[in-house]
Length: 282
Image 1 (cartoon, rainbow, N blue to C red):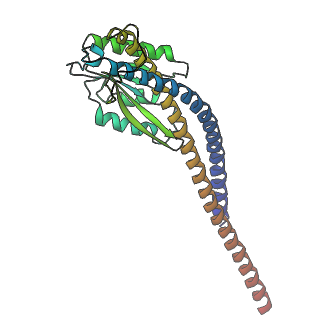
Image 2 (cartoon, rainbow, N blue to C red):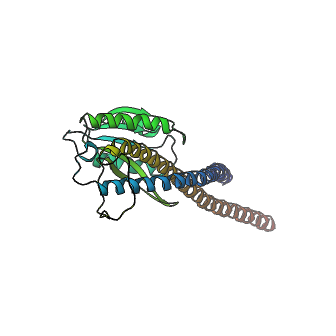
């Protein structure tokens, strides 16, 4: 019985130690989420108005045959995949892997961003042309290189489209993988107003030569920030869940320990009473 109590106490100490770690990681993830969310929202506003500007320009151009608006006949697409560099973030990466397997062809050119994704995709038969690891928030220049590489392949008609597989941040407890197409740029269904006062220079298709590359670079960075925010939110939830599970396990073990101690005390009392009765009988 004593050995059983010592084993339970050792398990309680182990669970309590694990709980302290998960609680600390939960607090760190919460702090990072707050900062990352603010950074993402500031950039998201810029990305939103950039999209609106592009759509406004497209609505003012009729019957355009600009290369950035036409899908190429190439057999492969160019897909940029965002994953995390660190683990302990729940099903965050698993959801990306599942969507990748369902939507991305093994013939496509893939740029894998994130250490976890780079490790997972090895030996899976996909055509990975570049990997980027340990990117921080100030990684715009690295993402611009990837965007320009994709744009160059698109202009040469070597790829059919440019896509991004990322995790969309909905709120602090909800986020989901999304596959979006950056090129060719698709027009919204909005109608162009003939009384619009906005004039664009240079006019016509020429403005797209400069605007669309800027659009692709900026949205790539915006989706990166959204993915990082989703990662921190997922990690916070995973650590919160782990902490709650540790609390439940600890409560169960403490109950078992108290029951074992009570049984031990009862047994000792029974033995003492038995010994006293035996002595009285003598």
